Image (cartoon, rainbow, N blue to C red; front, side, top):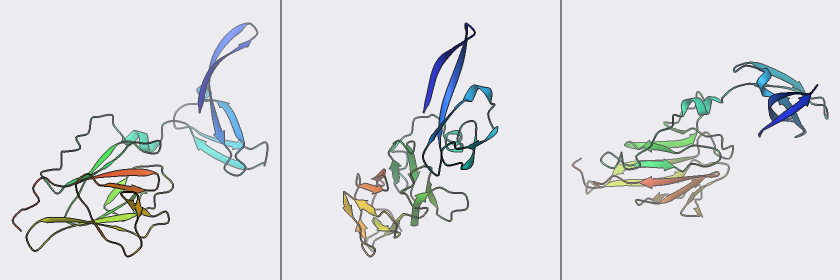
Length: 196
């Protein structure tokens, strides 16, 4: 949380931009003046409550650096194999992730993770490999989208129903998938009958 206020000292006004950091051990807040430090600078704090020593880095998070403000077209991949739209919330920004043939493994992005459809989020309740959407063709040549849990710690929900470890669900356009505290909207391809 950032709060801005003016401090009156020796009858002069100084503008400060105060920032609070929470001790990871005891949840005690420590307040400091952010304007005294430059972006990229590392700070070390010692909690006055529990004496825990911890550090932070001043500046923007890597997640917000990667994200560029732009308008995303949810229907951009309708002509391809479809997509999944990540609904913006307190942990993540809106993302449109295209699907490909085979297994599309969804989870929280962490460097070195072996999944092919990472979600850039700070949602701690999303596993690094949370769920999978398999895209394949039926014998009639129609695209099929099958959802399953990875299995994950917090579960995968399809239309507000939790999936068991062995459940497989056939998805339809507009279906809602919930992983952790994040909502995904499935968008099927426009052409469901294509030559194999």
